[in-house]
Length: 193
Image 1 (cartoon, rainbow, N blue to C red):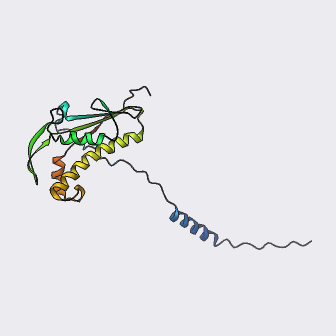
Image 2: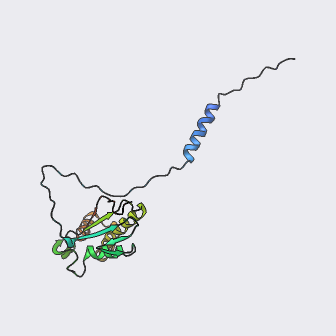
């Protein structure tokens, strides 16, 4: 019985094929990108600079609480997520100078002249540790949308264009007209969850 000799397989092009397959999979694979919150962290305070922690008047704080069951309590009253934007807009603008909403002061602003604006409105958002992430983000979005809508309405009224389409100096003037801060407190374990 004679044995046939096996002919060697030319593996020289195998490396080329493997390399081409690697390139193909790298080019055709899609990567999921995690998205985050577009928030700007506060600037670091200079140690030599005295603390500017002014006592904020209670009427200048819009308190929003979210419990472990994703229920909203706004200014001590239950509220639906769909109503929070309008409530925040009224708080930031205080159009009728209500005594229980932020204090209004007369100020000279570029492009607007002398106007009555709210002085330092603060939106305080606090949630329970059991609050779902989805609800937390929805509440934040509604609160930020309230300020954005007010700025867009003012920009359209005075300049005939949306806030984001304005040049930087006009945007700064609109920011001064409708300024508000969003204060987020550390989550608390209120419901024992």
